Amino acid sequence: MDPTRPESFNHRSERLSTGRTYHFVDQIPTNYIPGSTPTLLCLHGFPDLWYGWRYQIGPWTRKGYRTVVPDMLGYGQTDMPFDATQYSTKMLCNDLVALLDLLGVSKAIVVGHDWGSYTAGRFALWHPDRLLALVMMSVPYTPPSLNYMPVEGVVSRYQDFGYQAYFATHSSTADIDPKVSYLLQILYRKSDGVMPWTKPGEMKNLLINEREVTDCLLNHKELEYYVSQFSRGVLGPLSYYRTAKVRYEEEKAASLPVNLRADLPVLFIWGNNDRTCPPANVRKSRRFIPKVQDVVVEGTGHWIMVEASETVTQQVLRWLDGLATQRSNL
Image 1 (cartoon, helix red, strand yellow):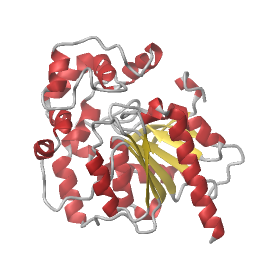
Image 2: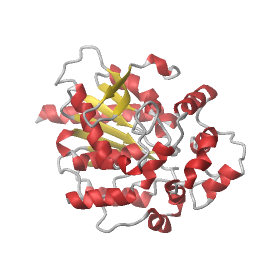
Image 3: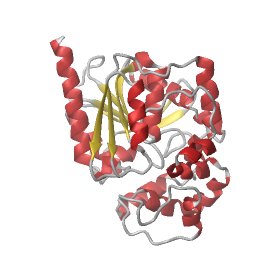
Image 4: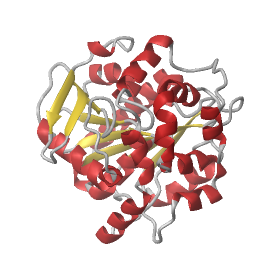
């Protein structure tokens, strides 16, 4: 499990009971005991891959956790449906349950970043009985909405979500497909202060008028790997931004609760320089999570698993150790 060598991880591809084929990394620790060894299910966001967890997979596995990390639907070597409705969080969560079933795992600790964090929060609502604990990163929990709000309405409240309205348009696919490498360089940066992209119109303008990027967090080899894994284009990954209406309708029909399970331990980790994670949203999320621990990683932005890889790795392990100690003392 060498973070510089993607091929050094244990890769699998399996067809799930939902009919979709997922590629995932499945790292099993020594002395693994089926039904007893805890499993971490790690979910990435946009525009990421299983590889976004490259610094965490090894340490977490060596500490005794089975670490399962899929390419999410539409990414890497996992199936890519063309219909955006196939990317609703209900359907994604059903896939993840099917993946756990395939692996013989009844309950997991779900860890998510970015869209993976949002999906992890919804997993806790759609399948609360399959969850031992929840770790969310960079995107705080938001409850199901009582009324539908299109992405444009969200952007009117939070201007730094302007890029979401652009990604939700079908024209953005054609804009980005020939410029995937440049998009990755724009997004994988420590700070967006020098080259702003979050507000309405800024991302499209950057794609049209390319400016040199000098502070990308990905080295040349890592960037090459990411680009190779986006060879099918970005239709699938961008489809997540086009599911607002179907998500609302599914959640309303199911009468999902707004609060997470009362006994569910939740850890939220975020960087204080992340403009896509407003502190007001973090504060608001606490009202819906009875058992949450909030950790701010000072001086970091959105990509905390890379910018502060050791801090994130160890923070999660310490938190899990604390949960294990609490259970043993009961």
